[in-house]
Image: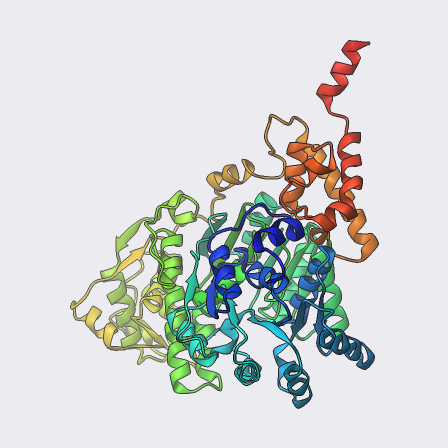
Length: 620
């Protein structure tokens, strides 16, 4: 072993101690062991292989799914003096040759490669000649066909490992249900190796899921009311919607850019680079954006369309608050989302088994959306982690919804489906229940049905909620081709009074109320609310941010690669006056101390503290 892991953590990365199970994982790897590591986004997975790579002799090979992710991680490592490079399709032939030479001559600590690179005879031959210390498989859920981001080329990892059977393999992911975990272990030969699982809880994230009413206006209220001038991601289902949403937000004074796979590569890269480097920019994106984002200061993730599973929701919302500071996961959804997602599943090219599993995963997400219990309890429960609930940091805990017996409403809705021969969607059925004489109702003679008008005492919003919750609870299926509701076994049980239905009572207001509790919770830890003992600390933090931005721009790197916000906050609070004192700030390693220390100390010293000015004036 070349170096002590704790010394590496402190001297290279500038952190005083390991967090959670990091030390256990690192000790296991240093002893030659392989493992599957489950840690939440922002939980410090990368250090679990980066630290051993600097402690062991040889080269650590890191398989990472996206070029952008590799680039950002390598840039951050190079900033702290680590010999790390990427090897992928973006390199020229001569650059690849230089990387191979450096790897073969022991001049590298970590080599990041894309899974597609593994699937070539040339790379296999090259890898066979390397002296490897470790295999690290990042985003390991991509190896599972049941995972939400399956990448076939990840299957080549097993073949590559066969060339180095004694080299430990560390598979890491933030998102894996029990079935996905089992497949990762099986495919990567980890069935006999330990599983290191940390809590999936992200206590700094506040969760809110609400009914869609006016999606754009709700989104604008959310951003303007809670996150004006902060970085965030807005996820949309379609490419067109990302562009329209970004354009509309810009027209409302919110700086926003679209991102989707249909943009030309130059525009897509430009938008991603701007998001990484600029502060206060919002990206409106499809799921093509995000896995490779290592930006720590994303203050919110908003969904204006329903994701496809709880895993997807957790993975996407996990891009908020990677720095541990307060962040929000906000989503609006409606019945149309349910129909769209189920149609996409049934019209997809997967096997029937895959479709059934996908429908179950969607059903679990709908259950989370419609739940009246603590969001955190339901979310963590999906991953097999117990939580007592009442977290106090989600919409259901802060503004508890009312649950009511919806059995009779459900029977009326199902009867309307049955009386119309299971050929129609929610809009037409609601018209029938409310007794509306539309052209469609009159044309089909549905005004003569026994169910016509039996729901006139309820609002359209209530009926829309009933159909949505019936679908979420499995009492209705949806025809994939036409979007019509279909009855099933549970439908008949409810209509025959063999079971009951509890539903969430919807807020009838035109817009959801903003959460004062959420705002007050955020304000206590926002960047403008540093400890009062350091008066003016908020202003000093802004001074340090401006300095960081200038230094980052001069090097063409994202600001957070210089220092994270949390490091700047600590500088603004502690106000170190010497290099030794600055070295005690979390996130200031030896190389960064030498590179930036004098510059930041000068800025701190030059900052005119009001109390110091008063003291100087009094002494004259």
